Image (cartoon, rainbow, N blue to C red; front, side, top):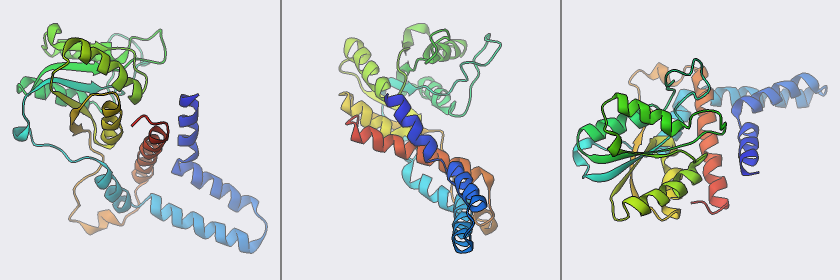
Length: 252
């Protein structure tokens, strides 16, 4: 029920859906004054959703900032949240990484620099016939030379709440007094930190995979319409809805 509700809210709130519904209304409505107002609204939303400056500013304020490596203390475990593998891609003889691969790559970097001693990967798969994502990512770390003894796998979580709850059980069983570093995408970090705190795990954030960028010096880049801005609005709204729903359900 929770999965269906969250996905329904997400699709209803997508900017592309709003634009399509407004465009359909403009074509369907017969009254000239209503058609004109709907057309103006459609144009305004198009200008808003295709403007890179507006969405970049919003993402910069939502995403937690990056942390310099030299300022980090030592941690017993780096917790990597999954959601970065194309699990159904074929042939299934390799791991297909997608957006967000920084979560694993930066964990490997932190491990190599001695900042984290072990890497815990959390994430399963809705399809029980497919290898859990955490298990797939473990294979990548093994190929990169990380010893199996330094990799902990949590292969059951299907969302951020379960990431936190199932990981908390593992940490309490194996490293109850450890120091933890949470590694996930910057836009997702606020929700993830809230879930882990609710599960009784105090972890420091290490945001990666940034969508926002520093302000460009060339002003035209900030006023020229950009189709990628619509997709970024979708990411932002999706995460905002997820955060609100989790807060309402007392998951944070």
